[in-house]
Amino acid sequence: MKVVGLIAEYNPFHNGHLYHLKKTKKITEADFTICVMSGNFVQRGEPALVDKWARTKMALSAGIDLVIELPVCYAVGSAETFAFGSIKTLEATGVVDSICFGSESGDLRILKDISKVLLTEPPEFIDILKKELKKGLVYPKARELALKYFFESYKSIDTQILTNLIDTIKKPNNLLGIEYLKALSRLNSNITPLTIKRISNRNDCDFIKGKITSASKIRSQILLRKKLTLKTLDYLPEFSQKVLLQEFKKGKGPIGMDDLTALMLGILRKSSLEQLRCYRDVSEGLENRILRFSKNSTTIHELLMAIKTKRYTLTRLQRILIHILLGIKQEYLADFDENGGPRYLRILGFSSRASTLLKAIKKKSELPVIVKTAHYKKIQDHILHKMIYFDLLSSDIYSLFFKNPFYRKGGIDFYKKVIIKS
Image (cartoon, rainbow, N blue to C red; front, side):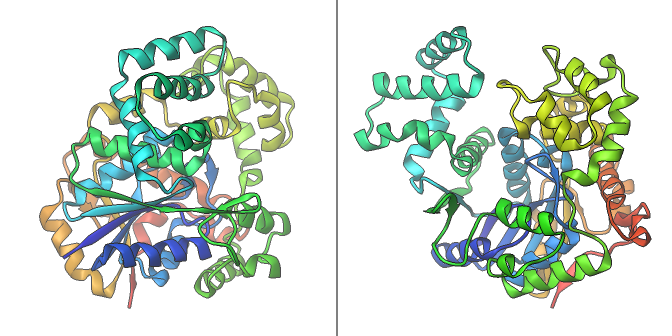
């Protein structure tokens, strides 16, 4: 039995995702596909357009065999945190042979070379990095230049690749790919990494030209109009269109950052500086900016634009706000990391043909497999209980953003059944 793993958010599932899935199945000849998917909040520090069950339906309709939820503490983290949590989850299944991710580079060799330097941190690289940081550069820029100078001085590398090195490490999917490779090394994993090149289409980074555009552009169009438009329909498979239309008709989406405004500003305005300092990345006086601007900002967008600086990118600030919204403090994240990362495999859905796959995972997994939510209470593991608490809370908070009050009740994880695609 050959199993390939995918890491995704499917926010929403579009034609590019479908192409990637089909291409992955073809090059791996896998019998089954497992997807580790973010829940109701995603890596950019935003609420998902529709909830995790709706996106699970899309994934299963596309041909994914099993969907596992990435714990929210890892889903709403830096690229390194997100990647480690995802790879640890796939590794813990005990059945995954390979992973396949999209990258703008499409060159696994250069991504591996960069990941090795960042993982091992050779003294020569660290010396260059320190020099760049002393110039007052922010860490990402200093790291870019340090990698470039290090490869120029100490590594034998193709001239064309070297010329494009900085551009390579600036691209978001290349960066995620590098972090996946680092995580595989950290875990001494036997999972084989593969990558599919994404081809640029105008200003988007897409797999192929045609009816494909980025998920962010699809979301922005939907959130602007608060509905599916003819323009966005072209970029979505029919099954995704159907799921989105059903969710929107029920008043369960689309959900965007603006929907967080009242709740988020309320939490911030009643917070103290000491409380804000408890969250990851809130340092160097950022807590003062957050508190001060929360008093006179009227929307989340206005708040983010006010507190944004060169050091704090928009996505980094958004992740901080989601951590504050859910109460995910630095001490909890440190505790989870010190105990090895994700502590369970939470099944959101699977295809009927994947019952044998699920049985194999239950037999081989190094982590508890949770199909029925309430069963986690039987597991004697206080770290697991704390981690899953935030997943359950994220559903309860997310439901408050639904337009239809009928769906705002809490505890949905306990009565929502795992999705089985026939």
